[in-house]
Length: 118
Image 1: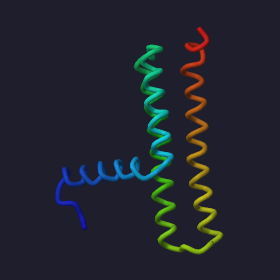
Image 2 (image 1 turned 120 degrees about the vertical axis):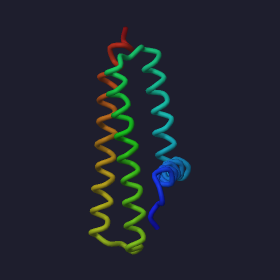
Image 3 (image 1 turned 180 degrees about the horizontal axis):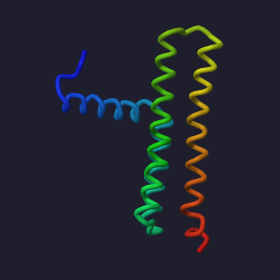
């Protein structure tokens, strides 16, 4: 059913985000790391540009994980038995999440290593 208006669409989107964070273990872990990263950003007085890079990085990981979760759940609805093509798609999607997480570690290092070592 199509949403009647923008506010209804926004509510559905917000519900999806809340459901993701309530139901997925990785979401809770990512949320803790995001809070810690933002706290470190405040402690080490990141510039606006550095905060922008940090925010983009954090959101990229969360969005990748949400897409992966949605894709996995959709594929599970299609075929609950082992299927090599579905396994390939799931592995590919998990690889996307892994690459985004590796990127976040690199960005964290670049933003914070000099500040931490001082």
